[in-house]
Image 1 (spheres, rainbow, N blue to C red):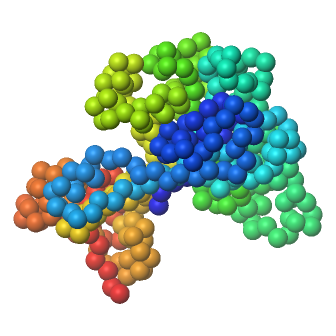
Image 2 (image 1 turned 135 degrees about the vertical axis):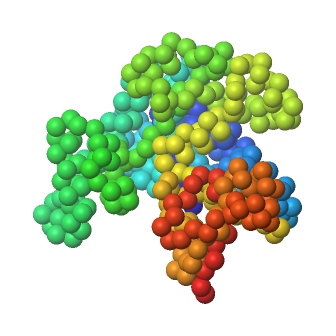
Length: 357
């Protein structure tokens, strides 16, 4: 499984510029007027992983296949979107399809780039977006709890929606639902406000290393844990550089890693994802799974038949595989283990599944 991140925010905050940078494409229009992006652009990006490169070399694989992440460039929302302002209902429906939300926040001054509000205020801007998503959730909940629709709800969905309505009526954050209900069942309700969030403060080049007054106030309010400081313009620029030029430029401006890498790491963190590998002479491949995934479920990511007929998993840790230089030496050195149905796959495991057809 890969995962899908939707980039949302007010118009002209840099969403399409970031999308182009992350996907290294010009698929997304990036123009200086509101509602430039109407239909969402989707870009599928291979997840960089040095472990995959090393495993591929050791196994002399013919092919190397990264796992992927999808970015969705969703059009700018405005105040009143939940009531249809700025074609808002259509855009809100696109957010329902993603696994996580990247909130793009304007944290730069510019006379050249139109701002839908009279001044730069990242806290206000985020609250506008979150309020519109909350209002959209409220409308959706009330419709589904209407007497004629309520009878069609599954009991577990009814419990979630009634609790959510109580939360909203008492000004409680819907994200607290994650502590009371199963995540998979929660996601089936289509509520926007419960989706994991990454806050991206879009800054100018001079602020990318240390931030500025806007990022400082934003972090003081919303915390640092899920907040990244990224310059969409810089990300776009470095995509045009050679590998050596990129390294030199990043060092010059005090940037340790690209925005893409930062977002992928944060995405894996907030969605609680791990990676396992398969590796052999034909191909080395990375696979994305949920944390605490059992071996049969991991096998099912490759093919449903692998999960149904699962017998065991030949398992080597990444460290042991590298030190033993492959499957054969791992087995000879006693580093390969035979794991059964209850085994919880660890991040970095190299697995070979045995199954009945």
